Image (cartoon, rainbow, N blue to C red; front, side, top):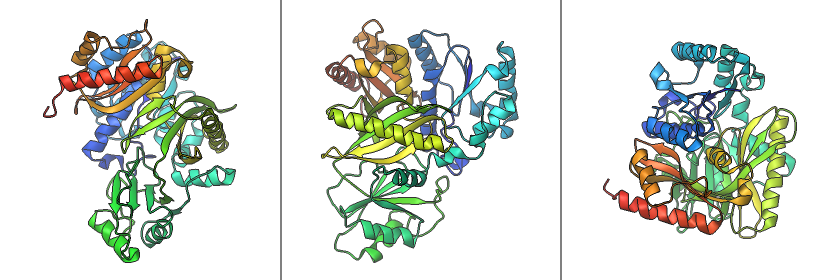
Length: 452
């Protein structure tokens, strides 16, 4: 069955005003969208927001052993958002391609980054045989809300960090003051944002590192926080304590203030929730935080077997809570684990995640059971030459992924604007994956100087 891939990370369910995203954030969305290309088969059609990187497509098709699939760019059809009625030319183009495919519209499926209201419009407009009704009711926003997650988790007895859902302004300030004495730090999260971009660590601890926080606000522990906090927010261009009118492109309705725990490890699981039946665990791993998310270790290393089992079991129960709301599709669940091995759950996201493409790559290259046979180490933001040249260098030093050997380096995404890639080091055990990663670091240092 052919599929239509609509790679929509800058969805209205994720960002209040997608058209107002600054260039850097929009490029990040382009990279996130390109991760979905790993799911393509020869008959599929994909639409991505940014430019089509033909070199990366050639690499992907060669590695997967398929003909180069059809990939269209939203921007080539005068589109700046995913609402199909704003882009009649693209709708006509896709409708014509479906008609010429030899498959009836009802035989096509839709895959997307997040199944929001815009995707529901696409499905109805193209006459695809899908049950889009729950998503037309804005279900995607619920299953990507940290506030909704906390309410469901607490109702089910799932442990979450101590904290509250608040509005910007006095409520936020007073809640920070109430909770900061617990550990000396709190984290303030935008209700709907991803990758830690909406997170601010507020701390009186001079040594704490803001893992998972895009911004860190340090306060004098001896000051009057009721007076100092709003002023410090203003001085740091944080309007959290001043106004409900956030910068353009980032306007969540609520914030979550949580007691911040340092010296923890960050775990993430991904499950597929069917319309009917039990959610299925797809993968789970440890997020590399440096201090923001920078990659994964799959499966997690150096954790007791009981933690592995508890995390997978709890993830299944959280996914069931989402299913009872009517959600189906991919869901990602995040947790932190402390030195005492106690798990605390922080959010769910009903969409593709940072590990979805890694899981797809591994399943296509290694098989469905790869978590039992291999260790994968990934990292974002490694600067290298253009992909065609870089892959030749990988082959030269014999670390390009080799299907016969079952190990090597895969380029997961390629950003031609910044020259940065996301890589996957695939080893048959941890030692091999770490060795491949070190060889890659050495190669990259030889090929790219700091001034490049």
